[in-house]
Image 1 (cartoon, rainbow, N blue to C red):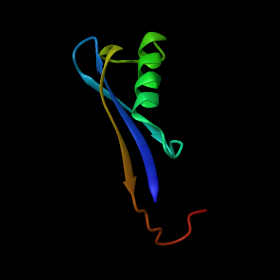
Image 2 (image 1 turned 90 degrees about the vertical axis):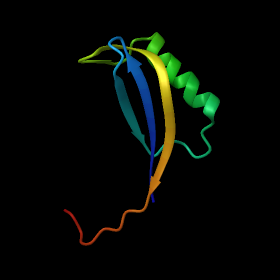
Image 3 (image 1 turned 180 degrees about the horizontal axis):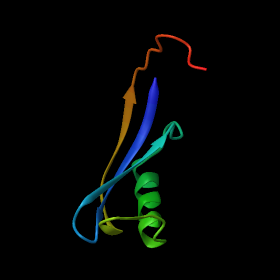
Image 4 (image 1 turned 135 degrees about the vertical axis):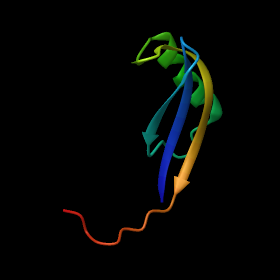
Length: 73
């Protein structure tokens, strides 16, 4: 099963930017994710075409089942 942490932020222009982290640590808590997101904003780690990230919008863990059909080399 493929697991991804998806974090969404609001930019200076009011648009939404999402960042996906593959394979987050098992049992990651809401508080840990909120702190990481706030650090991303505070440290101005990322920017986008619509400006700096200025607000936390949402976060979610997405789990999906992936079934390979043939080997990929």
